[in-house]
Image (cartoon, rainbow, N blue to C red):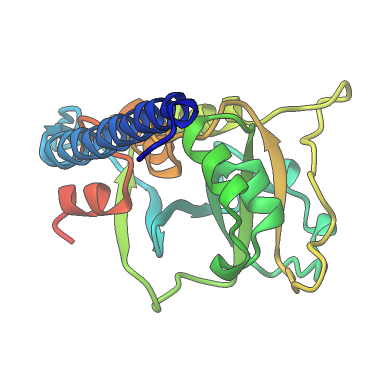
Length: 242
């Protein structure tokens, strides 16, 4: 026979178990809603702005997919913007000035600085990134040419469109009192970053505003075809037939 003194303990334990079950159900339901919203909104297109047939589109850039992440790949210097001033070659471990292409991506600062590989991802970093608890950074990576080892989409922009995209990217960067971009860390311990660095940026990464959302918003700002919303690279590349 159960002792009366133990009955309150079992009652509280049962209530606690019910609360846990309820929280798990809410969490699973939330994930399902998020997945459904992400799938539907990613396939709904935002059309590119209409241009006349005579309007020149001399500015070439790319969407560069690396796993779940997407970057803008641009010329390091054009007559519209010189990105070498924002991200000096001298900041790189190998200051090779012959690299003429630059990949620019936005993401969670803590993830960038403390997760050199997926094996280094911790629960605390993942939770902070998913919930918007951390701040953001820009990853700037120089390239000799167009990579051919990953999915890529080519875009051609007018001068006005390219100016708007450069302005969008620039507004994401934080500058110090002298107007210089703030490099977050010279080198990650144990990892060789010859041609890239991380810089301080505005915003907070979350499940609602991911690195791919940032790219998608940049496409909208520059009048390109985009998703209604996307948190994933697949949505972006779906819109361009990849």
